[in-house]
Length: 420
Image 1 (cartoon, rainbow, N blue to C red):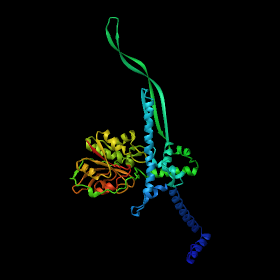
Image 2: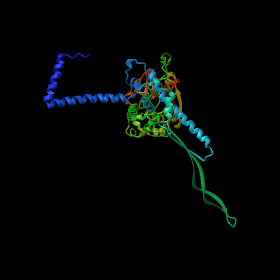
Image 3: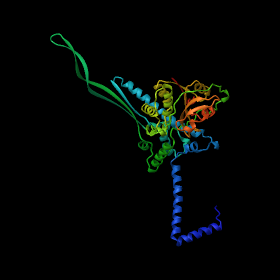
Image 4: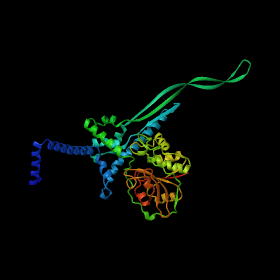
């Protein structure tokens, strides 16, 4: 029970008495109460706009020593589901190609931009924020409801020029260009991703309140969680006592910043290079340095998007590093986060390494940076596309390794070495 002192009661009585006779006091009381109620409403809306599964992960302080592994593992399920469905889509496309191998031409329109944030937003409502009952199978079932697949077989006629040898009555021959009608059988394979709002009714989210909560959660975590990397599989602490010494070395890599006005506001999928383009920017640095050709972030971002390496709401798929490097004629080798020796040796030999970083000094979520060299005393030199300040510092290898992303499965390999 609350104990209110006599002094407090007297003050309240005085204020109420003044309010009865003084309009100005009444207005002040009304404004104050309105402000308090508004603050409470904002707090309630904020709580309703954020999934419980992410609160500790994103907002807890490292000094709190909370065990976040269970929540992060659950987030990992949603993130993995995006890749699982992507693989199912690709397998289906290949099956359809085989079934329609008699066609003269096969066109594939692959518009897959499902994000794990959409899956969490739906489950936040369906599970009433109790993620103890979340299921990988159910997450996949929900994800598949976002996918529309279609195969259309059509015939197209067009005029084709061809050369024909014609002999006249005198026996003379000449080549005559003629035209003929050619009919081609075309198979068009289409995979589209439905919008969140279009899927809600299909997962039994039908009331105005539930629709509002789901869309609000989706918009909130999509806007604040750019290029995230919350999955955790490999928590093993690296044994740095086994780290060898290597001579200093570095790769001659230009520095690009993703906020540069020349390309920062250019699109990268539904976002911009400024907010989501650390992957293409990092790869552009490496390609430009190793090939001698000026390849800027906007060029790589465009290639990444067209070729399916843009992960909407999550930056870039890791496939951008392997496929993108090979596209520009480079040899790419993935290196495990448990193998710091290979990383330092590569830098010592003059080969740059792109690292996918997790939460820590470089990011609160996920971020690609370029490791460009190693100093005489073993410090790591970096090019961070989001920070000139961090790029001008020397970093302990322990920070790089321990804060590297754990988003790569049991054999996590968030490092890629590039060679000409």
